[in-house]
Image (cartoon, rainbow, N blue to C red; front, side, top):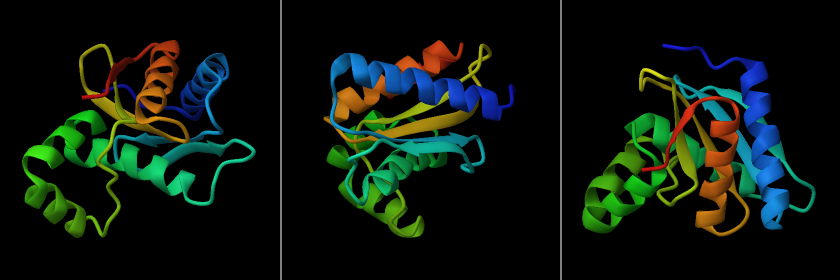
Length: 143
């Protein structure tokens, strides 16, 4: 498994921010977690609302914790709401089950971390995650 270095996490942040600028999104909060769920890097653009960082973290944390992109968690929440609610209770409310949390996978398909973004629509958040991950040379799995 490839380690997620600080330099790589910063590349992901920079590329995600560039994509957000290209899309002219609302201000974003971005969190990059390693495979253990520890924060490797995070940033909040000027003008983000108070809870954006926590939401971005929850999207990435849910992806790492359940081993699936948050789009899949969202789908599962619609199909099995009691299950996702129970898991979120066990996680002390740390999961945000909506798109915008994307797994970072290496060439072998191993999970090396996740990116969570919050600030615009869930689809735009996810698009910026994917752009950041791919710019750093990894595979993105949004679910």
